[in-house]
Amino acid sequence: GAVVSQHPSRVICKSGTSVKIECRSLDFQATTMFWYRQFPKQSLMLMATSNEGSKATYEQGVEKDKFLINHASLTLSTLTVTSAHPEDSSFYICSARPTSGSSYNEQFFGPGTRLTVL
Amino acid sequence: GQQVMQIPQYQHVQEGEDFTTYCNSSTTLSNIQWYKQRPGGHPVFLIQLVKSGEVKKQKRLTFQFGEAKKNSSLHITATQTTDVGTYFCAGRMGRGGGSQGNLIFGKGTKLSVKP
Image (cartoon, rainbow over all chains, first blue to last red; front, side, top):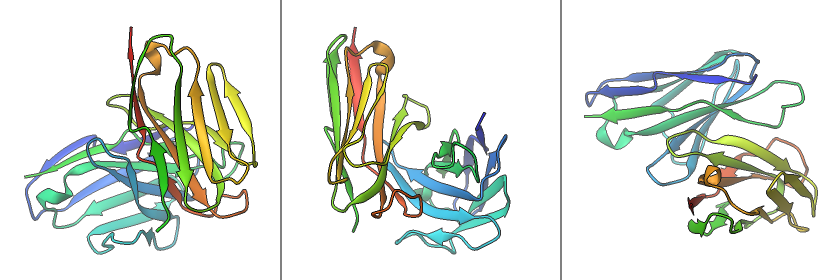
């Protein structure tokens, strides 16, 4: 149980285009989902906290107009990288926290999306 | 800002040796979590510690949470090649044991095990 999927797993795009990444909790409901970015050989950096039905909370230094987050249902959150540039190339990971149950305090991570902007 | 420092950054051990990674926070944590990320994989939750001075064990892994709730450690006894990966701590800020604060990840300790 507690599986989180991400789609796509890899994406290559041209500079200036927008890319949407989906994060789904497959067998549980998640009121809260998190989006992280991981640079090579570095730790996870929290970008934003996504709450179902409300606006996302962005961490300091993360541009909300560039990284659009939508959490329209209890099982789906999307991250859209708008007008992508090569410096946005990174590994983006989402995680989901179950709404209830014994795993409430855990975060379950998706497999990540490798974004390469040419 | 709030930080979680983790050391060492890298650790190379011979199979059978012990391994320890340490996390320190500049502020009191409400809880601390540990994750393992295998090479090429994504972080997998290992455990959460909430209480001051708490010690939890999972087979060869021992997790400790400091009395002041500002530091934590993960100790692996008699490492095996399957232990290879990066171990991250993640501290949740705040004084209660709850889950309201943000989770701040340490930079991770990359463990390699020589057979």
